[in-house]
Image (cartoon, rainbow, N blue to C red; front, top):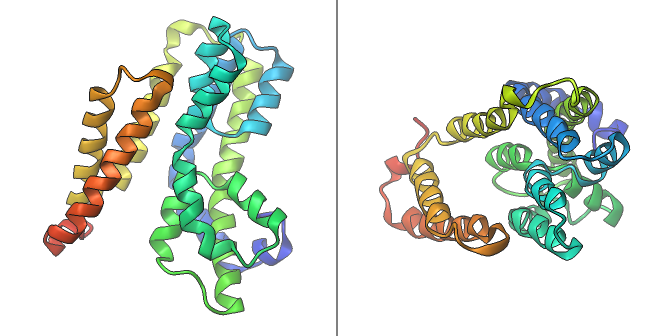
Length: 244
């Protein structure tokens, strides 16, 4: 957690923050767009701020907003958010060996603050959990440095978007800007042939399963892409796993 001295005073905290900075612009644009979208959907400023600080999950927030506007039942909104965020179950299972030594409340806070980019950069740098106290401390400090940048970028711009929501006309198309941000992040991570193939498979599966309710096509796409990637990782030549 970035507010603990043991983490923010560790040298790798600043290193992790610097590595995350290039992605901060895209995250900021995504947060600004989400803030505007919440106000445009009819939420009050207080409701939008509460959703920003308590949910902290852009994709599920954007999935829930049309349902809130349409007056969908509360359980449908919760189920949709749950399905969109199912990938964090996979993230949590993977991070469990890294964080299991921590008290429960620290594991919960770390899990709440860890976002997609933080998870990707952390697991790329540390493929194995730390074995000593020093290694575990370094890993938590690196994770905290990563998600400090994503959290700060997201919160600051979401609040700005909420406050400016009524001043920005819908014709500016900020919703499409959010999609472009995600495409930019995807392109930066698809740096091996196997990862590019996984992205293509996930996209094709999401389109093929588009008719599923509650946006379950996203969950289906993730499951198909993960299964295909695991199978290809054992069959494909080593060059497919090398960064271009």
